[in-house]
Amino acid sequence: MKLRELAHARAGDKGNTSTISVIARDPRDYQTLCRVVTVDRVVAHFGSVVTGSVTRYELPGLAALNFVLEGALGGGVTRSVALDAHGKSLSSLMLELDIDESHGLPQRT
Amino acid sequence: MKQVRLGCGAGFAGDRIDPAVDLATRGRLDYLVFECLAERTIALAQVERLADPARGYDPLLEDRFNAVLGPAHAVGTRIITNMGAANPRAAARRVAGIAAELALTGVRVACVTGDDVTTLIRDRTLPFVDRDGTTADIAGRIVSANAYLGANPIVDALAQDATVVITGRVGDPALFLAPLVHEFAWNPDDWRHLGRGVLVGHLMECAGQVTGGYFADPGFKDVDGLDELGFPLCIVDADGSFEITKLEGTGGLVSLATCKEQLLYEVHDPGHYIQPDVVADFSSVTLNEIGENRVRISGGGGMRKTGKLKVSVGYRDGFIGEGQISYAGTGALARASLARDIVLRRLKRTGAVFDDLRADLLGVDALHGSAARPGNAEPYEVRLRIAGRSPSREAARMIGLEVEALYTNGPAGGGGVFKTSKENISIASVLIDEDLVTPEVEILAEPAR
Image (cartoon, rainbow over all chains, first blue to last red; front, side, top):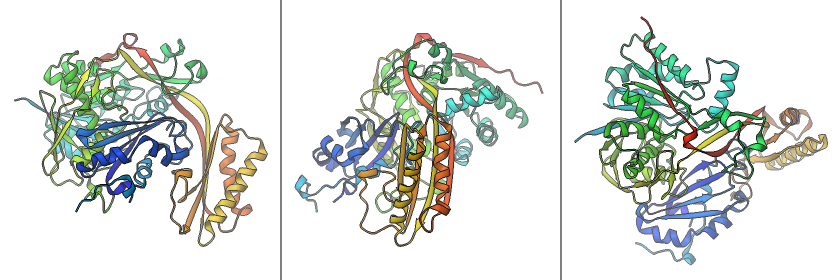
């Protein structure tokens, strides 16, 4: 199962930093997101896309996580030679994250 | 109890024009705000102003004001916008001219200046806040430096009964915070209310992004009517809580999900959203769906401002060249890959120096590089895109020429070449003390009739 099943996401840019929200589609899945979508997993998932540090902010009131990925935009919108200089499409990469039973997903009927 | 109705008529320079006309006509708005100034836009506008002192403002200003000024003025809706870009005074003059052409009376246009700190920045060496290095590294190449002003000069303009306020660089949320400060008389150290006003601005400033734009994902997140997307309007109470909605009969969606996505959009630490007027705190915001396409937002707050202003410094940063070519059918991937190798070898042989050079296959790995997770099926079409930045105009130009030469020298069946090269203006950010900046407000006299 992919993260897309549990969450939606939006990517934004500030300089050479990408910010990506991960928001539970059902607020009851927030704790699962906290457990599954860790900084380590995001770092591994994004691989060479991110050259700096990754920070996660937790927002229980919104049932959301906010990720800040430094050095993810090829020098920033105004310098980058990438096709998607804003990194708008990085939200879609985030939602490709594999999550499965081994990560302790809740069984709901 | 007093309420203020704000609309957002544009979320970026190229945004649609008709949703703003609809808002002006049917929205019963007190204020209509247009946010049209991206990070680099003002630097490009400054280059344009250097070439022609009468220009340097938003290229769509005339189209927008011709469409919206009449309907807004007819119902007493005031307009606030950063379309002044690098030349707010010239923009204000043009708007006054448009008012005269439309035979509107009582249009009082104000311009806010003082954000241009180019001289001040040229005289100092300041560390970059978004990367290593200092302004000494770009000395001699600086074309513009603009401080993000706060809401105060806009509030001053409104207090002087301006019906249109044109600014250059201000913090985007300040365009919305200012009318709230003006209407509710919030004090300059009322951090909680200022923080909530920033929250209003933050949710509104990207226009359609809170009403279902940049959101749809068919089957997962469906949105109807994106071809007639309604732009947001909000109704704000004196305590800074507010409702976001859109006009009846427009396309799009206002839901908890669209509001949450926009709440976190381009935010680093949601507990510390730094703006010129306040450090806003979005961490404790509460959202409630109170009806169809109606979300009520309360809570949030703020802390003392930092006393520093962010400055975007525009500087000449070499040249960017690009070339693209497409291949199709069985073997397309192999032929595009061969084309990529050929061009890269050719560029290497010339000895051209690139600060950055990318060769991507569109449809395969152009967006996410090695992190991409393509399916097993070979794509039917593949487009090669090579782009590079170089100190040399000639090197940048070479990329497109080498891609184009694949027509007769490359793999079979290459078509649809596109090539471009241009000088690149980049942006670096620094901080300065707010005391160094003096915003000014000027009310233009109505042109003689």
